[in-house]
Length: 150
Picture (cartoon, helix red, strand yellow):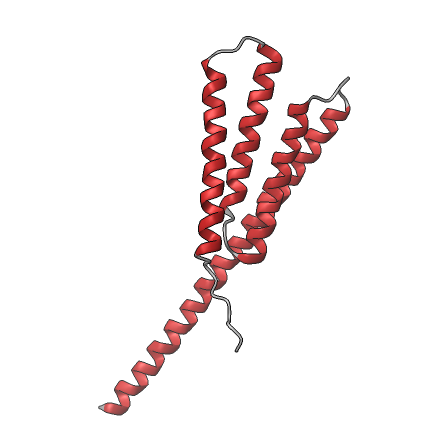
């Protein structure tokens, strides 16, 4: 009886290891495919926006800030590709850049100050404070343990 059970246990463990490996392969394959897709779409959108800007009579500051948003998205994809960690700070940087772009666009086109400007500035301040908190917490409590050499 023990020989039969050992055989079945070994077979179960091999099946489990094979299924685990196959599942990891599928997840990592999808992961890389999605990253390449997001990176390619970001690059395409940035190139298309850049070419569109060259066709304009003049390039506004909010157009340049749009290119910075694309740059941050590309950097975020690159960092995620290399480290498998989502860089939260880059999302916050994108949010700050997008709000500043909105603020510049709103002020340059509407020219009448209203409470919307205060709300956008409050959003920028809140995101800037969030960046400060994330940077402080990541330096104080790093997620990767460093080896201490003696």
